Length: 324
Image (cartoon, rainbow, N blue to C red):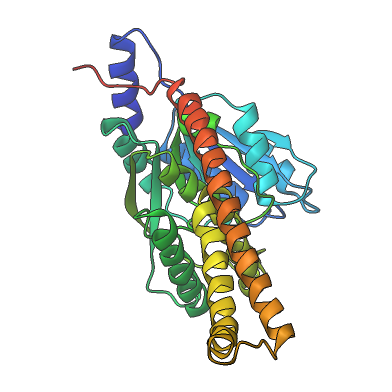
């Protein structure tokens, strides 16, 4: 019996019917979109497949419709914009998010959804495993590890593959997710959102292969890597302002002490302040240190209030549960 059959047999016995949506954001994926839709139709035969086109200039839309997907469009360019629109438009119990480039293992979707259902998880990440250099280049692996570990340090232990585009979400994750990013950095937001709200998450290893011939990646290793790094910094500022401004406070404090201690010692010894500009600069750094610390404390209280409201919003949505 398939995973979907198990879901529907159990849910119907409880007087409900679970809805599973496969979400595929696309931009110029005519080479692969048909294959992706067919593979997910086979893996999750009862799921509804949505393709959101993001201003494609090829035959992506036509091919997606021919393969039976529900096709909609988002005019604002960028993966983050497409995901924001998807999450707002579609209501389901579980959402399978996957790229339209045929690099992810569709057969793993049933296992990922089953895990989310069995363990009441809000996010299950497809942990990419590949021995093909063309599929997962060294630069991408290194960048992913660095950025993932940076998020783990700043926000706590989370997923091992933060930049994976293969995810399963619960309804309460999707409807409480703000989706502020416009591009590929939206995957970072997924992880931080789950960590800050203390959501139960899981991972499933999935095969990751290279794009078929004729299909080109839209990801730029360096440009998008820098954007993701700045997104992490921005999230630290918003979610952990005391840490963010505390670092600046400590930096200004150390600069002020480095410049000011010799001046103070000389004043104690001679009674004079011959280096007045240095003394003023040191005083300025100490004032900036105090100001940064106060800003961090105030914004930390505001961030806590925002977190409480987001947590209450998250808890207002129910999660499909198996019968006991």
